[in-house]
Image (cartoon, rainbow, N blue to C red):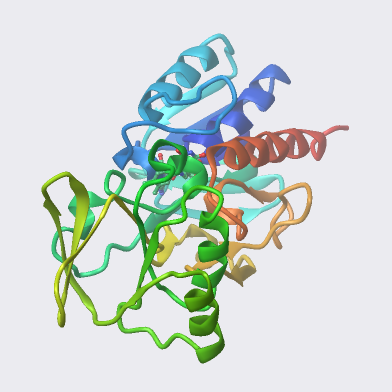
Length: 296
Ligand SMILES: Cc1cc2nc3c(=O)[nH]c(=O)nc-3n(C[C@H](O)[C@H](O)[C@H](O)COP(=O)(O)OP(=O)(O)OC[C@H]3O[C@@H](n4cnc5c(N)ncnc54)[C@H](O)[C@@H]3O)c2cc1C
C-alpha cells in the first residue's frame, strides 16, 4: 500500500512528491509526459529556473527526486480511480495500485480552435500569458483574440508591456461601453472571424480574416478553452468551479477536494491563473497536507 499516489508528474505532481519523499512517505507518481507548456521553447518566471526549456526543468526535478528511496516515478496513465480515504485504488494497464491518499495533478489540455495554423503557432507566435512571454516582446505590436468580457482585463493588463495592441473580435459581441474604453485607449478593433494564422515577413503572426485585409502582429495572445486532461475527478464526483476557459477542481486552502483524502494541485485546481510557480507551490501544499492528514 502506498501512502500517496500522485496522478500527473509534472510541476505540481513532482513538487508534491518532493515534500512527501522528504517526509519518507511511500509515493508513486504516475505520468504520461505531456506537460501543458511543452510547446514553449522557454519557461519564464520560476525563480532559479527562469528562461529554461520546460522539459529541462522537469528532467532536473526528476533527477533530484531520485535521491529519495520512497518515491517511485512510473511512466503510465491512470485509467480509473475508486475507493475512500485510507483505501483508494488506481488502475494502470490492468494493474491496481492502492494508496491511503490521492493527489490529482493531471493538468488541463488547451482545445485548439479549428483555425488553420493556430495549433502550429501555439507556444511560439500565439501565447496565452504575458507573465510567461511578455517581457521578450515588450514594446512590440501585440494582438489579442477576444474571448469574452474577461478579455477587457487582458487589455488593461497588457499596457504594462506595450502601447501597441490590436484586438481581434473574432465574431464576439463587444459591449458598447467596452468599445468606448478601447477607443479611449487608442486600441483598434478588427472585426470578422479569424480563418487562418500565417507568418509574413518580419512579423510573427499574420491574422487572416473572413472579411477585410490580413493583419500582421508581432505576437498574438489567445485564450482557447481548456479541459482537464483526464476525467478521473468526474468518476468520484469531485466538486468543480467554472472558470472563463473551462472548469477547475474545487479545493480548500490545504488543496483537499470535496472528497476527504483526495487532494488536487496545479492548473487542474487553479481557477485564477496558470503558472509553473503556482503549480509547484500548490503541489507542495498538497503534499504537505496529505502527509499531515496521515499522522497518528
Ligand atoms: C504555451 C504555454 C506557455 C506557458 N509558459 C509558461 C511560462 O513561461 N511560465 C509559467 O509559469 N507558466 C507557463 N505556462 C503555464 C504552465 O504550462 C502550467 O501552469 C503548468 O504546466 C501547470 O503544471 P501542472 O503540473 O498543473 O500540469 P501540467 O504541466 O500540464 O502536467 C500535467 C501532467 O499530467 C500528465 N497526465 C495527464 N493525464 C494523466 C493520467 N491520466 N495519468 C497520468 N498522468 C497524466 C500529463 O502528461 C502531464 O505530464 C504556459 C502554458 C502554455 C500553454
